[in-house]
Length: 336
Ligand SMILES: [Fe+2]
Ligand SMILES: [Fe+2]
Figure 1: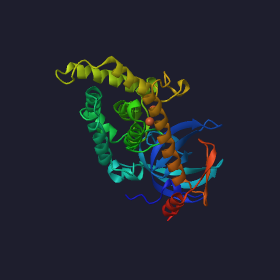
Figure 2: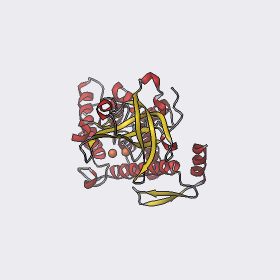
Figure 3: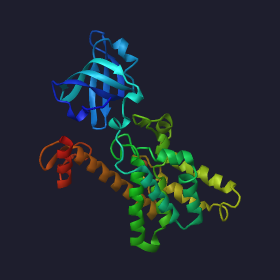
Figure 4: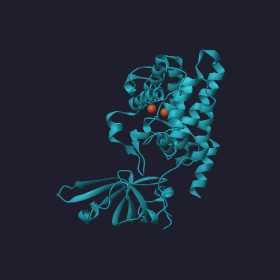
């Protein structure tokens, strides 16, 4: 089955007959005690609400999160939002669809990004820091395979397949340039570990087989502490391998790596238990913030459908953005 109609194309009053991935499904009850279903339907171009008013009992078991479904109905606008009033819904098998139509991917090849990451690891000089990076990002096959797929977030920035690796490689390139710029006062290897590992807990904080969501571990512990725990575990593992390290892993280095991870959100109110207390931690925090904002604004500007030189209102940043030539171009291509 080839998907031809996408969420972004749906117009008011138009009949809808296409496939979606269900991002969210809840059953509610109306004033008269009659059950109905609220769905969030998604594909690679965006999301649209869905409502089921009839035969809810029958559909409740089929219209569940992570299901690919064929939807027939009509698009209407309710309180300024488009919604599909669904008359018929049918579950599709994975071999009937192409996941790429539904789940957004990085435009950069995961293998090429991973090769770049490995190049950065190879260029490290401190034997302890380098062994730590290798034990996690080269030798741990679970980490390697998850890193090639994971998004960096549920929404906001790099929220697509392989988004985390794209974010990490981008940050590390900037950190490399900053370490050249400032020279001796910065520890390049520690900066790199901050780039590689600051969000590594997201590999398990999020689930991203189909729809991206938080895991129970993510909700209860969070990626900062999860990353710090992983470092502790790997340091102990390295120490248990005879001849792997030149000596005992220095305490100061272990603490600094954990500090860079734990402080990368910059402020206590953003979830960091400690604010950055060395230059490397401060830099990782600012560059992480910068890189996520650049991606978020780029994607927003590209996807915005408002004609002309200005985007619609960006609620997160509470402003309109000027649309440069490249964004206007990608817009008319997307519309074509
Ligand atoms: Fe983070
Ligand atoms: Fe990050």
